[in-house]
Length: 417
Ligand SMILES: [Zn+2]
Image (tube, rainbow, N blue to C red; front, side, top):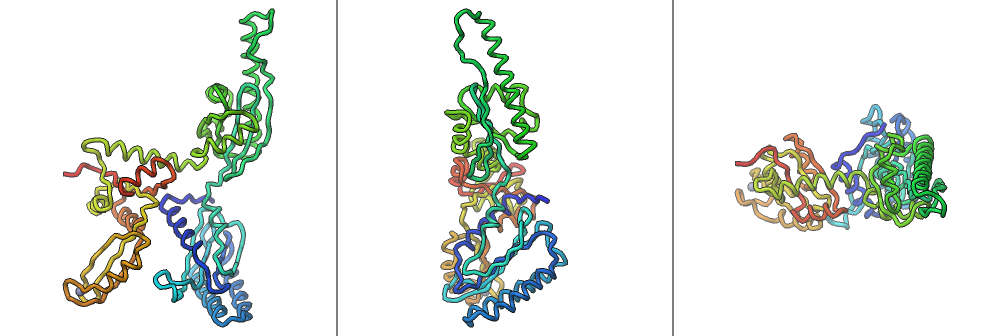
């Protein structure tokens, strides 16, 4: 069963992947566990018990203790499940240097319900986390079909990730544009039109066999030089399912095999995913409101938070590169609370500073500091008022432009007074 992540969930998993990919264990002691769907929890726990036994052979005292601690921790967490989620479960656990003070180590534990089924059981204990399987699960996995066509040939290809495979190339048999001596111009035109028509029908037939019967693509790109691709697409040739799946027409210098390879470069934005197209629409809507005198929009962190707190928020748009963290310091003595928004890389420096200040109310310096990524904070606020959250990348021009507005904006429900 496919369970699509929304943009906030994708952001969270990407952030975690990024964090974990920078982590190295002191020894071979970081555990990655991939549990496929339908695996009963007791079965997994029994396997982990075996691993616990095996770990007793580890020579280094510290590594052995760390591995066994982590295994106990995982088993405790997994015991809470009667049954794992439909797509299975992914766990990362182990002792890592504390980001606050790398001399210390702390046990971290992450559980991820993946966007698609975990393909196979995997237990690894290593000096790093095994992230590749999860990474590949985040990619838009759908195969993209390519037809690269002009009036002399058509190539059929499949794009998967950054790989492209040429499946077939057929030639058109359409005669040259130039009439032989002795033929009437009209007759020549008619023959040529028929030849093109036959060729387009043949292309559509092959496309159906390749892209529907064999590869079951979700998206199609039609490329090629000149007008042939438009004529083919607009005409009554292509199976309606493939027509619906067509995400764009791309100009290339060649058709056929060469054209398919070119499509991978020229169609980059299309291939990046439907998501980038969605993001552009979201940002265009924002820009349209910004340019109006009384546009239903505010931007920048504080105005956006205020709109959210007032409940006047339809959609929050936030850049995945906003790199901002919210610090909240609560005085343990009197309850006085302050919040601060800081750059992510400075968070621990800021935390140390805040911790040393005296409480302006009671004068004590007993702070309880909590740290939250601003995307999480904003999406909590948004959930409370029923607003949507769209995390946008800054991979596209639109995304970069949006980031320059402060990386966050709120589309309002009504005009403020
Ligand atoms: Zn106080």
